[in-house]
Amino acid sequence: MANVVEQDNVAVDRSTWTITSTCRRCRAAWNLAPSVIGTAPDGKAFFERQPETEAELAESWRALVACPTGSILAPKGLKMPEHVFPQGLGENLYRLGYNDNSSAGAHPFFIRAKSGLNFLIDGPRYVPKLVAFMEEQGGLDHVLLTHRDDVGSAAKYAEHFGARMWIHENDRAASPEATDILTGYEITEPVEGVTVIPIPGHTIGSVAFLIDERLAVGDSLGWELAKSCLFTNPIFCWDDWPMQRRSLKRLQDFRFTYVLSGHNSSIEFPHERMQSELARTLELLDTMPWQPPTHLPTGQAIPEARLRERERVVDIVKADFYATLARET
Image (cartoon, rainbow, N blue to C red):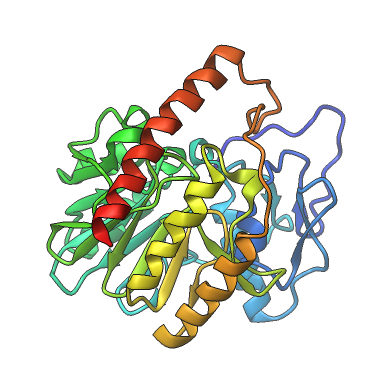
């Protein structure tokens, strides 16, 4: 589990399910246990009520294991079930849990594709349980990184299995171990059964991977439980919101029945319903304003020189991206 120290002189009640003040507001717990966990005004997770049913207990254990800061505590003496993660989401599709603190608690996924290849989507913590699971599945062929924020411990899995690791050139600094660098903004299929859809905006190197009608989008889109819709919040757009909105419109050209999200919930719908939900969301996003962030998620101010450099690089990316779109029409 993650290593965490509670604030000094704070007594933790171990008679009930508890979330300590070390919660980092990553939303993983709420996504995994929405029936019992809520979000406080400060963005931190808390138990709205104690789990009672078998399903609620299963949700709570998943939230505990996934929590990247170890902030969720079960009642003292309550034994953890043996198979909390990986969590099956569909045929040959798994949410891995063990969310990594270095990826801000993003959800990682594993797909056994119809092509016969095995894929890790973004990086969980490196834990023997997941290594054993992948070995049982026949190993790991490729690690697909959606963007710079959700790399986690992916390189350790790639090294262990001798897997190729992919990231877009714009975000490659986050993964110096990557063996394969995606370039440009054209839609490609560099690996059998994997469609790469560059969707710059959230970060300039954000990419969606489409495998067997499952769409892994990182932090660029997800299912918002509170709104019951596909959504992405401009507050968490680090590089360019207008470009992110335009990027997401590319997804209307593809058939997918599952959206796999890094920091929001994942959702499965028939293709027609999914496209209807996407169209509704795109219309909403076009009405939402955005200001380029001036502070890091930690609250630390971004140096002025770094802000100017981000603006310069984003302008280059926008020119190249929109030129690619123009060639596609």
